[in-house]
Length: 365
Image 1: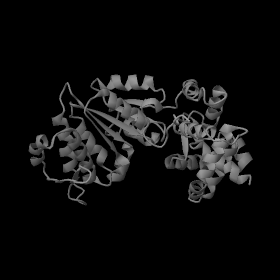
Image 2: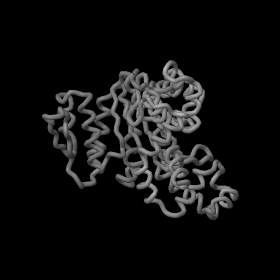
Image 3: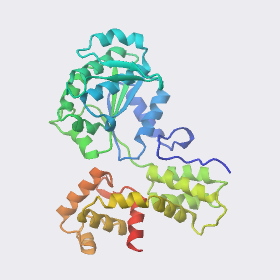
Image 4: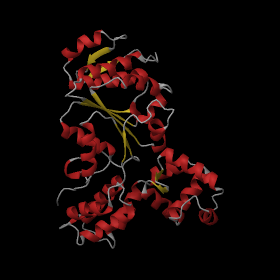
């Protein structure tokens, strides 16, 4: 049996990477200019895989930091400095570090070989972060700009409510760095970069990352299923009908279909069987999630799982008793913030098609 050609749950690259040629070309071109870039997309749309592929292919020095993992102001500085040590020799950095207003503790981990860095915890002093950012600028050159990627950038407000002002005041002077800001909360990212009163107002080129076009995704799936599935075209179309071309869930369902095709047991509908198997494997996760929701959340999600009618319409309320449109709207905003619902344009959908399937299944037991 051939190795499964589908991958999900981690950064996707190489033969597993799907399409995005246009986005790669566009972002690559922007990074060769003086501009900074803002990439917005819902979670699991593949923005991290996209930017990491571009960084590898660019062969430029780069720093990638997921802001969700940053604990505090001093941790932000330490995590950036740790990544600087990965791309520049320690000897080159010594002189720069001596000029920092607060000298960090730097140790080499003998097990991992990583440089472990800490600034004085709990100080809430922003000077280490300013010094580290300016160090990156000094290490870059006009013809060898360093790329700095800050993923889930909206998390700066969790770290420090005034961090946007400080970052803008420092970053706006940099000429040897291309910044890439990424985020999965569209409303927060747009507020940071499109609200006139924001320090980062129109600071870079904004690129919304949507789903992969269905036709391209279908060709990607068909190519891999040809010779393994009896009707690669039908299997591919059925997968996309369930996942609506969502990059993560399409790869997940295609992975499971491939696994079932390799089993000796016969399945009446291989794609439906694979989807059901995924739902069963996540039953406990979905139940735990469901129990964190309030009654209105449950009512809205139940209606959305049963119908494609817009949840903001009178017809939706009539069918599912969700109440006033204003109540539903605030519920949707809350569910979007939690990542349970996504909004594309004016359309709201349950992000995980298997959660939608689970809700329907559990209500019909």
